[in-house]
Image 1 (cartoon, rainbow, N blue to C red):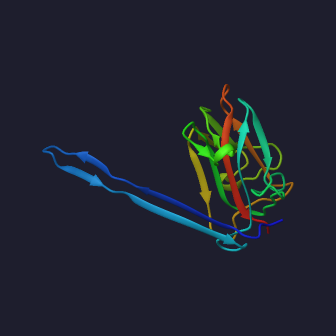
Image 2: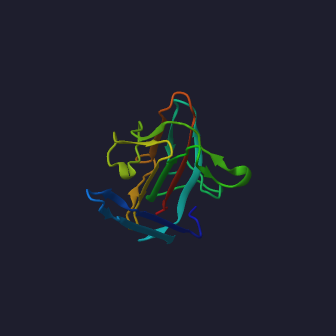
Image 3: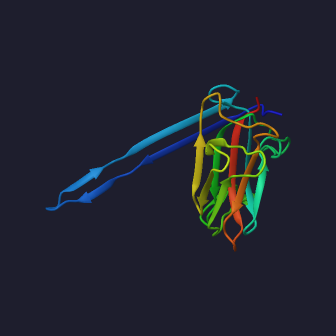
Length: 187
């Protein structure tokens, strides 16, 4: 069942100063700047979303799991299965000891897990932004992977034929705690 109200804002900003001291004391400087924002509201077209998953997941050392991203996850309200035809936001963060998600007794802090790998499941792969069945993406400790698109198409997910996302813990000694957010539209 699609969500009735959805409002999500993503903002990515890169700014800074890069300098090099020159002979004679002069300074050469560059100030790169880039900013990109995505705003999503309830709907199914451009900039629309009405379904999603947002949770911190835990994987034992050296373990892996294959997630069913079209019917096998529960929405953030925990009242219905997430059935998404087109994903528009893919966010994964392997939580480090400096990262905390949530507040109070429900807060989860990361640990020293070295990395996780996403992709290349057996069976019915959800390709998302990975592009091909055997492609994978490794997320290291504290790193964030974000793919977002505002178009009406999104990354297609089809029940029983394009709905499996494998996540593997590459650390043989430490469990993985990772944030997974998948947002899209039900139709």
